[in-house]
Image (cartoon, rainbow, N blue to C red):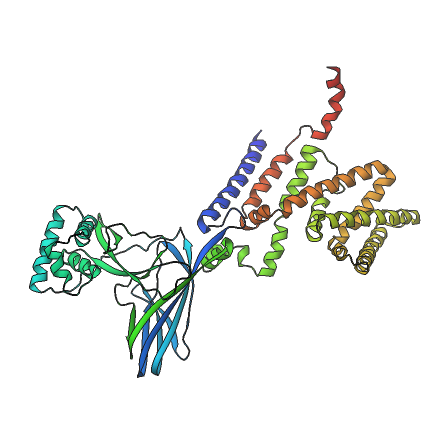
Length: 508
């Protein structure tokens, strides 16, 4: 009784481990359940134009950092003659070009690929940004103070205060205070930041890029990020100073989150930065592999192997599924096969040759092999010598069929070389002995059963969905093992054995 409890605990443990590992891999690495899924990748070019003044040039372009909705896959730059460095100082990543001397018009290119990724999150802030040192003239200071005082009355925190200020800034008929300030060459974005700064609310000016397929010569859209601290947790929200609606983060890449200049240029003038972008759809797995190429846990997997070895494992990892088919057909259905797992190896050969070509080739090889083997039985050879002769015979038959099919223009026939020669030799030997001992009926029964199981295993092992699942979710091997162990404890009737009870059913 205790042994049965241990057995079922083992089966349950394997099944649970396999399911857990499979689900964890899907949610942790975003491995898709089905093949053919795609992910969106944005390929963005930033073009930097300026005039060099005949001296050393140092150009620093702020680049995107980790943020919600997007994961950086790669970055590179085109800068002939310039030295290039990618910096990450003060949490503000930059691409920096340098050259000892440059004159005239200069053009630098920076390219980045980002994956649209719902699992990516904004970085958490550990401290509030500092307030700006900005002075108003007397009229602006008085007007700004009154605007802030009115907004305070109908707000509760930094975010609601910002919304109240936006209502005033974007009113159809602006009041005198707003008109007074806006007349003095200040944008709504700068005014909103100035008002919030006067109200002692930390803010940051963010340059956002609206992603739209095929757009060229785009510029960053200024957005205000407002901060507040509550219960020791710093949170922020994005606001567009030109309207009162919430900022839609869909297809919005926060390019410049430094709070400073997008481009810092020394040794040049008349600088300009423009953006072009294109949308690409890539297979989900390829995009995820690029995303997680630095993840050591993900690299500790079959995907870290060379492509040639991965292709080998794609076939090997399907064998347990074929084994499960064999166990089901033998234990539950009751089909007899020639050899326990020979159908799995034949199914793998079918995958290489195609089903029809494989069936024809297998039947021809076994039929001719049995005919020649029947002659060898009269020579009274030792087993080792007889098997060795059959192996050589099978190789000669495969070579002969290959040459013959090539001469006849049947290129499909060349694939017959994918059949496992040793397995075929043993199959011919076993069938020959069975023919001598039991007769042709048992040979046909076992041979037909082997082919039937091989065909079923072929369909299971060649299916794109099962190949995708078994290769990318290694935990499914434990699930298959659990089912095989469970079927191994089955002691009931097989389906094909129930026909023995048909006479009893007829009497009733």
